[in-house]
Length: 455
Image 1 (cartoon, helix red, strand yellow):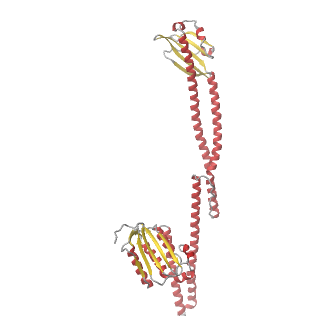
Image 2 (image 1 turned 180 degrees about the vertical axis):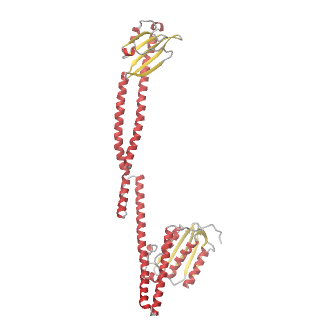
Image 3 (image 1 turned 90 degrees about the vertical axis):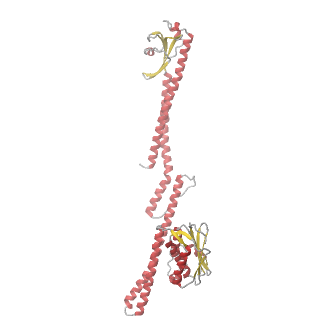
């Protein structure tokens, strides 16, 4: 059973329960109120009779004329002694006269059903001083009540049936209205499943209720999935392209080595050197790809207290030996402590310093400072710079400002993407400021510094 039918059946079921409860309350309340009013009317007549007639007089036989004045339509009035024997009696309904009389010493009333009709009996004691001499009994057939009850029952039945019909119609309409966005989502998902083309559900201008939010959430999710899917396709395409070039070069030189290199030492040296260089580049590219996958998956972070001054000094020492270049560290602090993963921070520094050293010939400057929000460090070079229009793309994977130049330096366009992922994993921020032929400044912010004394 689909949700629409479930909603309709459940709403109709609850409405039936509510209507039955309300109808029962109305029915019994109506009978009680009408009966109570009729009982008060009869009791008033009998009290008036007792007030206008002396007890000794009404208890004498053959006093029916007195009772006749107070006899309602479809009723009977009887005077009983203490043994429930009828002394005086008048009736305009012979069936009521057959009802068994009953002596009472206190005022009582009784309503019961006989032959499909409601009959009301009211009994009052006849007092002489403080003594009970007998009882006065009036019996009335409530024909008007029966007719009113039948009318009430018809009204309740027809109103209930009408309410149920309207409930079913409104339930179907309401469920259709509520489930329309869900149906559109299902239809859109089926189209996406069949065509693998991401689509979104059009949003109409209306009140932002839960259904509107659900559609918004679905569209946002589809947008993110599509973006992730496109990035994954682009990543696979770029990775394939980057790996294809060194593999092709290695294959070509291997063929050349097999054909002519066995007897030509010069060809052997050239082929071996090229194959080695391309193998190293493939290894670096593969490692970069593994690093990206690890960062994307939110790999484990080993937090520890790191002295940024010491870490920058160690990393700069390694890069000085590799490139035979000057790297200067500037800071007013001797210690700058943060809580971070030291290995990933070192990898971040290596990537940024490697880029700065490759595209400049002057000394590199590392500046470190801090504030209440966190720690900052800048790496500045006076190299060739980056064109202004290219700055927004530099963190894209496999993006290279100048592919020919990057090929010469061995870059694959993954370094800055890895650097950005490391910074994001540390909940920090990285920015690049550059001017062509002037130089480049990379600024990194790392939050959550460990409280430290001033030095």
